[in-house]
Length: 433
Image 1: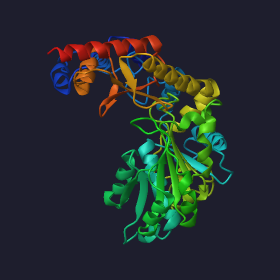
Image 2: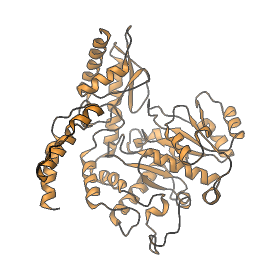
Image 3: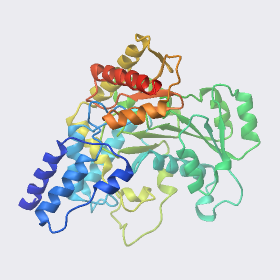
């Protein structure tokens, strides 16, 4: 590392400690203007200071809005290592250690799921992309000719009414169209009704969610299992939100259904609090993951390409995201990290239950604390959260309730209580206008 880079990193690290400010896009358009005539050193410092000033610090004690936090220290260091070496994880010869690390942590996670040695996996750029590849595998499983000839007739995927929009996005990218995404209520639909839907359509996959985005609820398709086997329907579990329960000795029992699914998606940048992105797709029949995407490319894959991960990937360019999980598994206590986040969320729920000014919306969720204000006045929830953002307090909402997510390691019970008091105060101010 050059002395010049070391000096620049020192400037960056100092700027990261500065106060942060939230403002609108229009305000940024006016404020982000740099003087002419600055030296290279002055311009670098000015640009870095500006970026850090107007960037939200997801490590801040008032950040409780999203399904990710500031990232752990070890994850940050792993990210630095990955960026410094700037390798492409397509072939072993170009990234030997990163390839080794990815394969090792995939193997370990497969063991937690309960798959046998035939299983395989891939780290991919985001949970939505993992879902897309899972769907493509499912289509290939039922319609293997689709890889070469495509399909000239409609096929359908079944998902719940609460599923992530990535299912519909994937249907668009696969050329299926969103009209062929069948949404049902898993709780209300009987096995007989489910089978009727299957019989009257070309269903190749069902998607269930282990931790929905809006509420963190866990869905089950156990009652449909006989129908799924009868008609060879692939079961994909979108476990992006809560799938890291696999790494917790206390909560792993909740993932017992994973071993029966054909594929599972896990976002380790969520409740493991690793740096974005760290998304893993696991496939029970590992050979299928390679078969569905493998294309002969002699200029890249040679005779010694046994460990070339891109042989089972639709991507050629692959970032070493898997290394971050491997690195943290070596140096952090992942069991404690996951358990801490889930236990913290349980304590937040308890705070809501004991405060008469609020009412819980959903009692059981590993990751979310969802609640409403108890008041006889209109709750202008969008305006409340917008006003809080200007104060540097970040909490999300869905429909008519607030949604707090306890991923950020710097949020504690006192910090949560402070945010609740700010919600009450802002609501009162808006009600008096």
